[in-house]
Amino acid sequence: MATITFKDNPMTILGTEVEVGQKAPDFSVLANDLSEYRLADAKESVKLISVIPSIDTGVCDAQTRRFNEEAGSIDNVEVLTISVDLPFAQKRWCAASGLEHVQTLSDHKDLSFGKAYGLVMEELRLLARAVFVIDTNGTLVHVEYVSEATNHPDYEKAIAAAKEAK
Image (cartoon, rainbow, N blue to C red):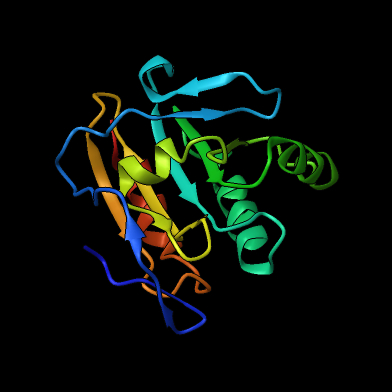
C-alpha cells in the first residue's frame, strides 16, 4: 500500500491499491446531474482520471484546470475528475470555471471509486490525490499515488501516458 500523508500527517488508506497492467476496477459515482456514472458503461475512449481531495482547494483547482487545458489537445481521451465533493458543489465550481474538457464526478455516496482504487483517507473521509490512465481495453497504463495529498501530481507523465494509450 502507498504511504500517504495529508499536511505531513500519516493517513489510514482504505481500499485496494491498483497497479499498471491490471484491468481497471469498475466503480459507480455520481455526475453533476445526479445520474450514475460507471466505468463499465463508459464509451470506448482512453480515460485520464484525476483524483482530488476537494475541488475547493488551490492545488485541486489547479490540477483540474491543468488537465482540462491538456485534454483539448489529446484525441480520444476523456478526462474525469473525481472527489467526494457533493455533485452540487462540483456543478457550481464547473459553471464558475468554464471548463469544457473535464467531467467532475462525486464519490461521496458510497466511496465506490475510492475503495476500488485504494484512495480513501479514513481520518478525513476524503480521497487521496492520484492520477490514473486507462486504455481503451480497460487496462491501467499509468498509476500515480501522490505521497503527500497537498502536492501536485506529475502532470507530464500522466499526459504522456494518455497520449500514448490506445
